[in-house]
Image (cartoon, rainbow, N blue to C red; front, side, top):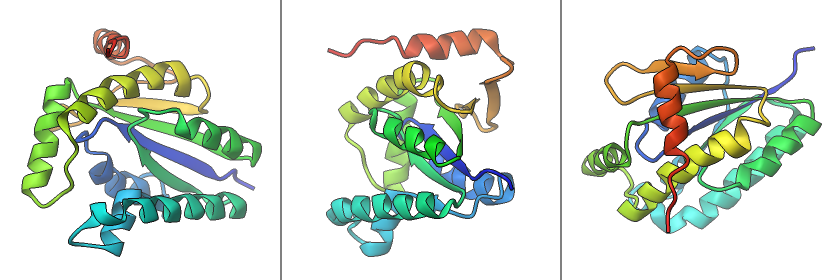
Length: 191
């Protein structure tokens, strides 16, 4: 019997995680379960999703537990800016899951800020600028230092321009200079 998979779709705010998820997960990875607190909040309160973010978070955690308990392949979305999913990965491994990480990278926090502003102009949710900048650097740092060492496979995709491209994965580095730049972005210190 094939092992279930946990797909982690990661990247800074504005990187295109949700957009990529709706294409890649069902069509490429045959993953039919996408657990996303932002999407849950939109379902609970379409006009004011931020007002139900705590409730959406609780529902998300409950859904993740149920999927894990039932051995169902699923995906989550995160900026990786905190260590919170480290325990989830360990638990998934103990339950026989394979954990795959797809990190969607943008070339700068400024581009992330611009993309979030565009999303807001189209009716999407806002993230404060200081939070975007902090998550940008912390997410990359955690990618290299916390998450890449414990997942079964990882891929970094550059989504800076109109056509995404694979930079590296756990077996091959296709763009060594860009990979080194991304790794250096994660070394940025925030006071």
